[in-house]
Structures are given as C-alpha cells and as structure tokens.
View 1 (cartoon, one colour):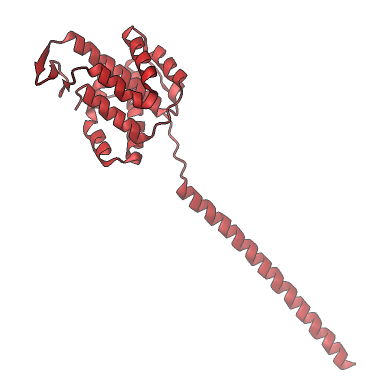
View 2: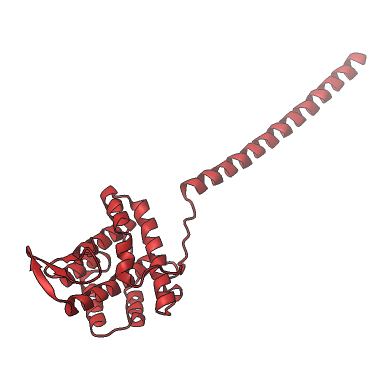
Length: 229
C-alpha cells in the first residue's frame, strides 16, 4: 500500500516537472522568435534605409543659374570620373535645393509646390533656364573664332563653347527626357515661355526615372556644351 502511494506521488512529481519544463521551453522559443523578428527588422532597416528627401529653399549665394552650376564644376567632374551613383544622387538633390532657393529668393517662385519630392524636375528646369541665360549672352556678345571653337566675351569663365552649343545642349538633356520633349520645351522657352509654363510642361512630361549618375552625366555634358568647364 505504501509502495503504491509512493509510486503515485513520484509519477505526479514527474508530470509537474515535465509540464513546467515544456512551458519554460515554449516561452523560451516564443522569446527567441520575438528576438529574431526584432533582429530582422533592424537588419532590414539597415539594408533598406528610409532615404527621404524634401525640397528646401536655401538663400542663394549667386546671381544667375549659370553661376550656380559653375560653382560646383569640380564636384560634378569628380563624380562623373568616379562613376559613383550614390554621390551623384546626393549632388543632384543638393543642386535641386540650390536651384529652388534661387527661384524662391530671386524670382519669387516656390518650386516646393510642384517638385517637393522630384529633384530631377528642379534640375531640368534649372538647366533649361541656365541655357537660356547662356543663349542670351551668346546672341548679344561679340564672338571670335579660336581653333574651331568660339569664345564669348563675358564675365563668366571659362566659356569656350562648341560651334553649335544649343544643339549640343538639346542632345545632352535628351538623355533624361527624350529628344522630342527637349526640343519642344526649348523652343517654347525661346519663344518667351515663362518658368511657370516650363514647370507645367515638365510636370506634364512626367517624373523622370533616370538614375543619379545619368543626370550627373547630362549636367556634365551640358557644361561642356555651354563652356562651363
């Protein structure tokens, strides 16, 4: 009788210990699972960082769009030579901010309403009207031929330009928006289209999908066409 009671007591203790061991193991696996999920979230955030950008309008330190592009000529040259897309994207975003600041403080045009998250659109607008500034100088200043190149006598240096700088410019920007849209927009600007009209046209063309380095190359090509470097 005593042996029977002892056996029952032993079996009960074994069941109780087994129950708590299983419960502890289950809890451990639940905790580990949560830890793994948390770890996965951290790794995902590192692999896919939130790279948000919003257009800003810093006070410009230049008096023309051409000067704005000229100021960073060594930066864009180094980025193109390195073929670094990440640096190019940062450059394009910073350039977009500078262009937006110029338009906001000099022209009283707030580009944040139309290009809040579209640096490519801002840079394209800046390129077209910088080319318009160049074209006005090109038409007004005395030209002299120098080894099949032309030199514009103005305050902007260096300004050695190709024999057909405007056509060269159209070809360069067409790598971003296409040759047809580039020609149409340029002709509209030459005919007197305002920045607001150009903004509407760029929005109608739609957001570009070119990478940072492609835009960087286009900017560099434009600079070569218009004698910025």
